[in-house]
Image (cartoon, rainbow, N blue to C red; front, top):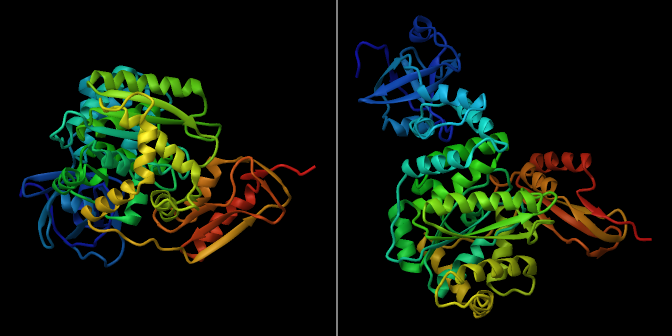
Length: 503
């Protein structure tokens, strides 16, 4: 403890700010008054020779006594703090990476050293959420060069752990996203693993969508596995589906994703660096990229998809990774469920061969699995999908999925939301369009992905003929307030599912 700096004793308040370090002090604290600290000040907190830069939040009640301070859960764990520990408080030294971020704001290309400064300071907790949001905004809209994307990917890989496997062929997949309900990974992984290829799938939670792969898998089995547990699952079952944030393969990316979610931003350069950094750290050698293209998908045109494909190819090649990119139909949601539990229900129906299973989800998953199987030297080009279909129809994929769930901690039952509302057609006719963005937004306002059973269940698909008063979709929520909140958006945008007039 540095006795030259003012100090306080810690009290655990159990406040979760995800990965932002925050310190809580009384507004009338002697340190705040003497040092001129106020709410949102950045302060250096030191405990037992470990330090973190934290954002100050002030308290005007007796929650903390004089001489006490508290830390957010992230800062508390970062410093390995205990109740009663004595911390010292100081003004932080100037953070060099802030000038690098300012340079990017004014349109300058960052050097490798500057990008390393920024990424290392993000992981070390030196930058606030505001600083990180500023960096993300400054690099969005195509403002990262190919070299900057490569350097960002390299820096993100360098901050995390690395996996190695007893095979020279490690496969993986990633869907660019923006397509509600597109939960193919939970079908592709057991197909590929049942074939015998090794597929250590680390997945993200939702960024701008109502569910990410990790959110949906978490409905069915634990995904918060550490590195050793993940390796054990893969070595035992040839595959896994876990949350990448727990295994810390790219800790900078986990922090960036949290900020991207808050500001609803997912730029090209950051996306490529995010995806590839985790795949490289996970030891993948061959990667399939699926880019859905559609008017309300994340990628709106073939031209934009081609640019993204070229960026993926360029960066991946520099890391010695084999990448295959395919374009898929992004004109409407995939499957019927939108939201973790509803998507999990679709997945199980496909794996179990249920006649009610959404055929578009099944076919898309088989296509992707087929492309991945063709990475194997034993599979002839064009034969992968046929092999994948045989594995799925035989029940081998379903048995493998159950085995993966058991290895990850045990399979869970799917719950159902207690509140729902049916949206019906005002007239008979054909379904002309389903707006991906708005249908996803309704699911999010209803509580997804944090409320696992919340979301939207689609009863129709594009081109289908329906009668007047026939259900279009059902909104599910875990509270009446969340359901009403979602329905407010529906009132403002009644044509989320457009039905043509029957003439």
